[in-house]
Length: 114
Length: 120
Image (cartoon, rainbow over all chains, first blue to last red; front, side, top):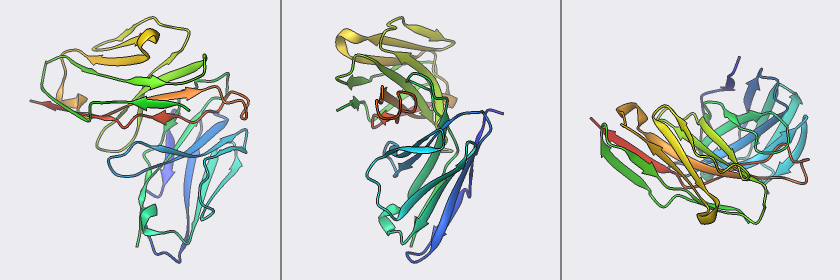
């Protein structure tokens, strides 16, 4: 299984809602990532988990809360988002070896904040 | 700080033409990794190639080839005999050894991407 799955595919939420994005992989990878991609822009790194521990947080606002319950799952909890948070949220996974691990991406969740 | 520049915002060619996508990078590290990803309209990023800073060998995979030149900090991508299915946004990306994560899980820094349009 060489796939990263993400649910839901689309999400519309109000600024007062709480929602979660889910990502799953069964490739045995021990690193998982969240990226945010605005329209016609490149993906921007948000968080990195290595061996289920948060290793990189790119100064992301606290209204985004990541969670890695086990080596196959990665969640992104959303609360009190702003309309400018509307974007494609991409999850990726990779091996953890000495650098330069190719990351495999899921199809993304397209989020709209009203 | 690391940086990736893809100066070509959009390229349009007719099918069967060869096309080269440029990528120039900046990094202070001696150990780093370069990647190319393809993003079709569906949105999913597809991994194409990885190259480490110690391996300057060019690579060919079917109609795709990559030219890595450390002297000019470039990692260019050529598609030979382009096809309509090659139409997509192509991103060049860079990662460095991350001391804090143990050097294994490093985020990617992407260039702005080149939108490639192959016309029939």
